[in-house]
Length: 407
Image 1 (cartoon, one colour):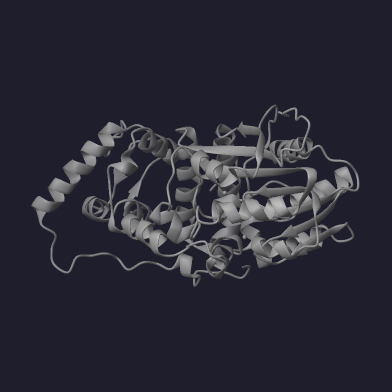
Image 2 (image 1 turned 60 degrees about the horizontal axis):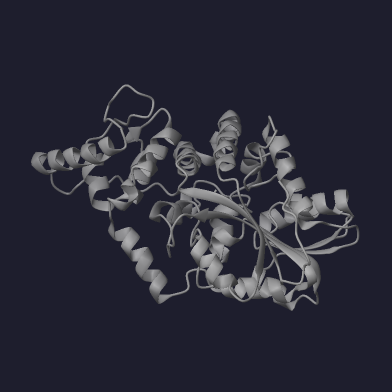
């Protein structure tokens, strides 16, 4: 999530392609009651594995409003589950706990669909995170509108996991995260920092004002770069609205390299080249900090609903994928997992978004509200079930005499 699974174009409205209202999927002929009944029984059996009842009375039980839900999900899997929720075909009071149960029971592995197969097949044929495709996630997600993110995020506009150690509020937890990054990088005044994936400029501002560092930041989001430039005006910070790969042209090398919430958009075919770029731009005895969502197993594509509506061409790395890409290139000085903190962060984002919805509704519309709830609560459930992690990895070229981890 610079993403939860972020770094966001103003002016988007209901005409935005990700907001389009899908046609109502009424069958051309009346659906067979027998087929509908079999699909309903199968879905009920699967949900029972997660202790979820259809039309039950517990907060995590699902209430089905349209009987076509069963066949739709049975045929199309997770993308149909998300779209039918956006269409108002079903509801759950505690959607986050519903998804935690789904993940714990491994139901995503039990319901296959053509859309998931097609994404996997695409990845075998093309590089879905190639530079030519990279702009789509900026256009569809990070450039949705800064009013949305200003309402949802903390005062530092951090669209990645907060660090809740000792914090009571989202503002405090995100300040903790920025301080944690700085302390792990062991900064000194005057250091030159290369930031790959700069978000709204909050980290660059923090490193420049609190530590006296000079920062060069790469980000493909037009709206985020405009916000960041205004925020950091007068500071020793330069923002480039360019793909991270173009940082290979920087004169460098830099004392430190940092990438917060970028790795979720890089893709397994590009991890090695990304790590080689960071290595080439880092001085001897320098440190590279990588902050990313991580998965428990190696995959080559993402959930089809998330790919279509939230993070196009996104992909969560695994330990094995990153380790293979690091081999003979980097020394791992520290690997810190605080994934449960993302659950709390997502809930805080939802509370802020929900509270601000009356001011956002006219621009974004009710279907967006359900889409955004599905995204935030679904992500929270994944972290709560420990299917998703949040890693901060500190790397060196192997020429650092010693490194003491920071928490």
